Image 1 (spheres, rainbow over the protein chains, first blue to last red):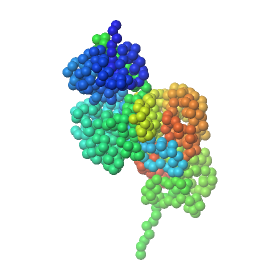
Image 2 (image 1 turned 45 degrees about the vertical axis):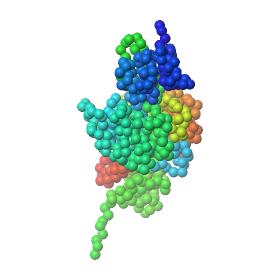
Image 3 (image 1 turned 90 degrees about the vertical axis):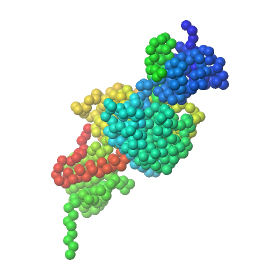
Image 4 (image 1 turned 60 degrees about the vertical axis):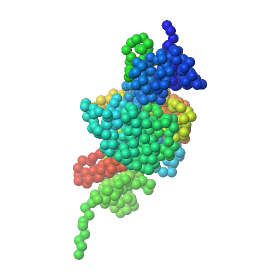
Length: 313
Length: 316
């Protein structure tokens, strides 16, 4: 059986690399001294790409690979993939929905609690020896606060289910109202922000949702409001976020994603009402393995002419 | 000539150590006449006292208060009150009832998420500027599917269970007595609970029986991947043993809001990323103190009008 060339765009967990190497001839793009040359050199044989949330294929890369049949992304976010181009050329695209809903939802709640109850700040307080000198200040209760979710998809619903266990009233904004939920719908993010205390970004990144959380929305959320971003950095106008937090117009923020990862605005480092995570939404051993199994499973299905497990295109 | 309005407010002693203040005390004076010294002449006739924070109520305290019939605690725990002596003298005792339960439960879940998903450690990583240099942060552990063992299924334990079920955890518990209304599996001792759990959450009261209820045997039974969360009292856990286990990597991690000798925290823990440390904050929100105030007022009013107390202390 001929060996199939698969282009891997970036390093991933060793389990995934091993599983791919057992089945295919894996070409590691990040090891190439000159990436575009590397792609040229292998353009006649690359039939599949494996990317992730931060590494996809733009039109240029797709055009450079005439034998490309499938792009299997190790993520649920696909904003880095030129889906239109893939559709045009009949290239299949698969992703990893559902296996990570719980993980990301858990992180959203973790961020809410960490911000409201000042978990990271008080841990720093203890480690610095300050507790011996005096008590930490009061923090804010989570139970019962109104949670507003931008994007009531699978992840948004998982967040809502958890927040309900804390007796939180739930409201949301989505492109279309969902008829079979009991949660309150608001037709704009601005109205949502005006009517909740904790605003969670849980939608996909598209041209329409870029900077969906802007200065106006943050002002509406207000000095007691908290913003949680487990979506994509560009969902939030980052410079506006920094000034809203520094000026106290926004009460707090829990961020897992940023506009220019891994760069994080340094003005945030000294703020106690902010929790900063390095894009770890799906970062557990269990979930990364489940995602990897889907990546490999989709490629296997494709190359044995079986239905794809989780196709997007 | 002005007539004096009679003061019908009942007399209540606010019993507090110098460093502890009763939150929202000024709200009480519309209902009660307050004083705060055992040396005051009113000590001999006062019927009720409010115990502020961990201020001890001992035989000596009670000897100064011959008319006392009620101790109103302002915390969930009452390990600083000589309950045996109160019972002997026919003095009723109340605690904070449900005023703190939700906040403490929220906090227990917060600590667990922090330990498993490494929130505080990852936040430190980002703030130190290491992300651009070191790239990927080490993976954490999934919460969903974890077997959570609750030590003490009182009002706090119950709220913790309710929350964790929504995350896909399975819950079991140990308590002094099996709770007929609880839907979760019961284990008659903490060792057996630990054998069958991935996480132990300590929410029980500190008594002579529960001192060091989390000991070397329980920690061993919990195992190398096990996580322990303590929102009860420091002395529920054998701290020296726990530190050993953590330093040697014989247990997966810990989230601790309480310690045996607060505010002292074992320094060996400061270097560990799988440990989250908190300065006894589980109740500390304005919402808690509002709720506590209502419970204190309700208990005192009930007492002074011969009605049943709102939150009499019950051994779980």
